Image (cartoon, rainbow, N blue to C red; front, side, top):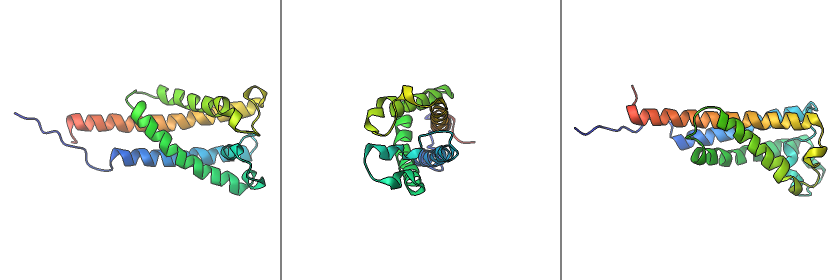
Length: 162
């Protein structure tokens, strides 16, 4: 007897990944701006504008919120990367390390692109700790959300929806 494999109903997985990336970027980008606003870090989301000389507006509120928007859009690509490369890894630890890897990529590897950004070893300790924690939480949010949905999808494909 042939077993019926039903495809799960509801929102497609790709849409869930897109929403997770968009919301994760908006949430953690906003928290990053709040940390910058309250002087927990010397580097705000406008870090993305530092690669270009765009004027004084980039450090003002409009520049910060525009950077949060860009961060949200880039976060969708990051979420899809996680989905296709790392989603099969169970648990929270991959998301934790994913956040650390993203932080290293932004603050260490890409540091020369950002003209106004101090080298990592010259940054204040609170900036390093705050941004590292933000990126870890962002990685946990993206990683754990996508891995959970992936496991749920696999379970529904295997056993069907009750």
